[in-house]
Length: 107
Image 1: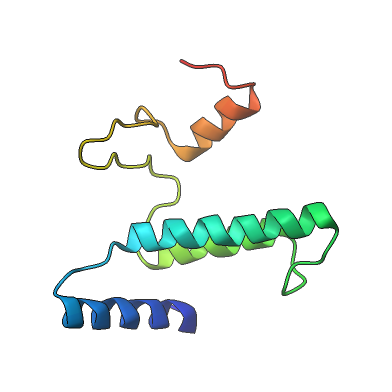
Image 2 (image 1 turned 90 degrees about the horizontal axis):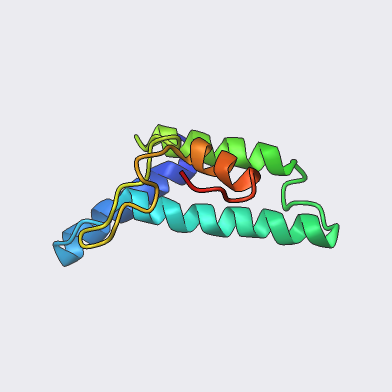
């Protein structure tokens, strides 16, 4: 686990000590994913190099490695929140992306 993930887990432990509530690593990482890929997208579209001069696929690989390092399978189907339908219908993210690539045809 790298320094970024060590900081994340330390903050999550401290938050739980102070509040008595545990943060969801999956939700924290979902927000991280949204921000990291959003940053990569706008920079790429604007012709601006990524902050560390790597490629967008490198960023995706890095985020996937971070998910794996804290025990989140980036290819697992998303879990439905309590009271919310399973939007993925049990499919993996790879299968969902393939559906989008085919023009959004549903099963």
